[in-house]
Length: 108
Image 1: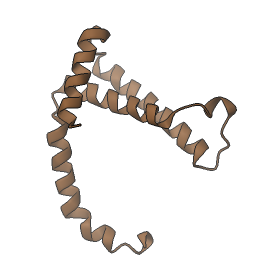
Image 2 (image 1 turned 120 degrees about the horizontal axis):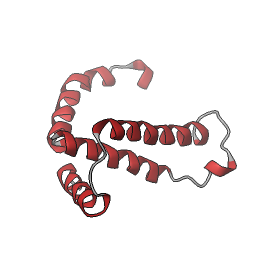
Image 3 (image 1 turned 180 degrees about the vertical axis):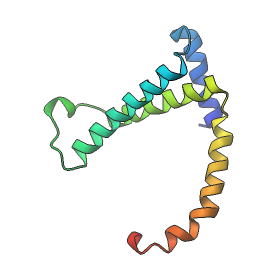
Image 4 (image 1 turned 135 degrees about the horizontal axis):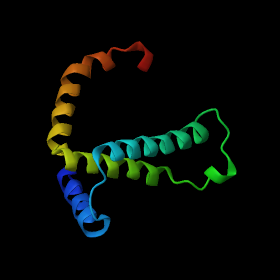
C-alpha cells in the first residue's frame, strides 16, 4: 500500500470513529509510548532481558502498526506527504550511504 493511501485511510478513520485528531503534542507523547512498547518487546524477546509471562502474548506486529498509525496521524495533521518525504529520503540514503555500507568491514 502506498503511504498516501495509508494517510487517507487513517484520516477517514479519525473522522468516522475518532471524532478528531489529538493535538500534535498529545500524538507525540502517544508515539513515544508506542515506541516504548515496541522497545519493551524487542528488549525482552530478542535482547538479554527475560520476558515476563504477561509480555509473551504481546504482538510485535500490532505494536509496530500502532507506531505507524500515530506517525500517519502526525503527518496528516502537520500537512506532510509521507510518500513524497519517504521517496526523497530513500534517494538521499541510496546516494549517500551506498558505498559507506558496502565498504564497512563491521558489516561483513
